[in-house]
Amino acid sequence: MRVPRRFAAAAGLLALALAGCGADTGTAVDASDASPITMGFSQVGAESEWRVANTRSVQEAAAAAGIELVFSDAQQDQDRQIEAIRSFIAKGVDVIAFSPVVETGWDPVLREARRAGIPVILTDRAIRTADPGLYRTFLGSDFLEEGNKAGTWLDDRHIRAEEPVSIVEIQGTVGSAPAIERQLAFAEAISSNPQLKIVASTSGDFTRAGGRAVMEDFLADLPDIDVLYAHNDDMGLGAIEAIEAAGKVPGRDIEIISVDGVREGLQALIDGKINYIVECNPLIGEQLMELAVKIVAGEQVLSRVVTKETVFERSAALAALPDRRY
Ligand code: AHR
Picture 1 (tube, protein in one colour):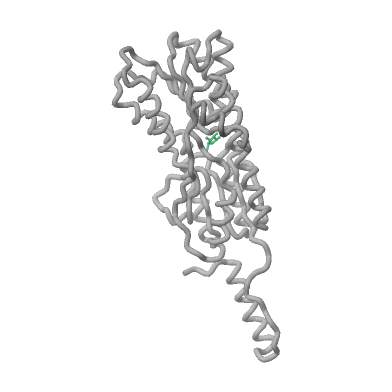
Picture 2 (tube, helix red, strand yellow; picture 1 turned 30 degrees about the horizontal axis):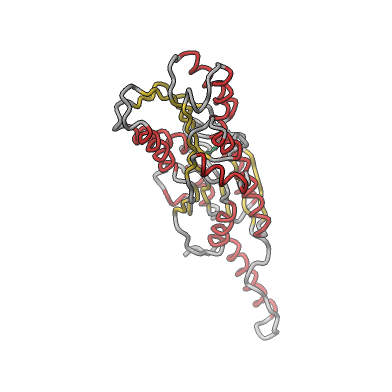
């Protein structure tokens, strides 16, 4: 097993101390490194309420665990994330964690981290690579399961539909794991129902403004939209603004399904403007710090840790809202 960098350094100091002082002097040298663990964390950005809650969760959990966090916001830009990871390597952090904005293009920089002996944790989003040894674990949601839950709910609701049901989809960031997997699994879940048809699908980049702009275009181009599937609440809420501005009633004229379960999303569900929300949980900071501590100590961890999540219809939203932290 590879000795973690910080313990290797401590062992080196111990050897020096023993050589210099003599083993019989009684000088105690503690081989455990008392300095705090340093984690370099590259965040996607601040594109959504989910993301803001995720950042807060990571920062609070690091402080509670006594982990020194070097935080970097990539503003949804892969090059900025690669730059941040390189700066973490140059700084010699103990562990790197990051939420990859897109799935591909990470191998070179992760090989650099591996060469430097710095373990990497993926949080929230996965990467696509032929070399799973480039990271130690992936902590986050099952986006395929989320897309499947959204599609299954819609399929059940329209199981006896005699007329075509026109669905528009507002996707997340192009090339990101949640956009790819939520789209794929949703399409698969509705595929056996010939009446359910996705008539348009465009990215709103996981932002509220993006959701509004895409929905405005859909409403201008497509006369009869029955259902909107938005890959997150923020885009769903932006789309609601566009639907209301077009004189339609969200949740009634157009059924809306979204993903996340942020406070404003749950409130819209309670108000009847959203019909169904699939939860995606951003509060993974504590689990991330626990994994980091184990990995830095040289312990084995599971290569995949899936976040627990639920779904919301109106009654569940009513029950959950008072305690919702984000
Ligand atoms: O990767 C998680 C997704 O990213 C959330 O669903 C979305 O709101 C965020 O921006």
